[in-house]
Length: 218
Image: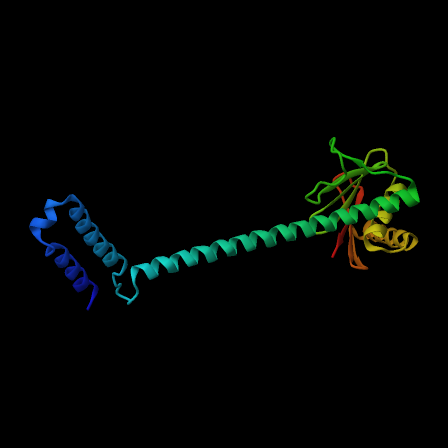
C-alpha cells in the first residue's frame, strides 16, 4: 500500500471512531486531531520524490553534505594557519641567525624600528637597524640590507656579507669574497645574481645609484 492509501486509512479510522462520541469529548477530539496530524506528518516526510528518494532522505543527505563542507573549510583554514606559522618561524630564525653573526663579529645589537618592542613581529616580518644599516627579513625568505646616509660603501658590503653568512651558514670570509665579487660584477654589468648554498644573491642599483644587496633563501 502506498503512502496515500495509508493516510486515507488512518483518517477514515479516526472518523469512524464515531461522529457522536468523537465530538462529545474534547479529549477524544484532540486524540483524533493528533491521529490525523501524525498521518499527515508521516505522509509529508514519506513523500516519494521523482528519483525514488524520500524527502527525509534528501534532508539527511543535505545535512551530511553541510557537515562535510564545514569540515573541509576548517581543514583548509587550519592548513593555511600552519603554513603561515611555518613561514613566520623561518624568517624569524633567519633574523636570529643575523643577530648572532653581528654580535659575534661586529658587537652589534638589533634595534627595532618604528617603536616596536621586538625586531620581529609574530607574523614573521622582521625590520630592524644594525648600526648604520636597516635589515628587513620577510615573506618566504627574503632579506634586504639598506644603507643609511652615514654608511660607507665598504661597511655596507660587510653588512651584506654578514647577512649572507648568517642565512646561508657559509663562512664569513667566504661570504665576504663572494659578495665583493658580486658587487664588482654589478658595477660592470649593471646588476649581478648568483645562487650559492641555497641562497640567491642579487645586487641591484637603487634610485640613488648605490648598489643594494638582497638575498632569498630557498
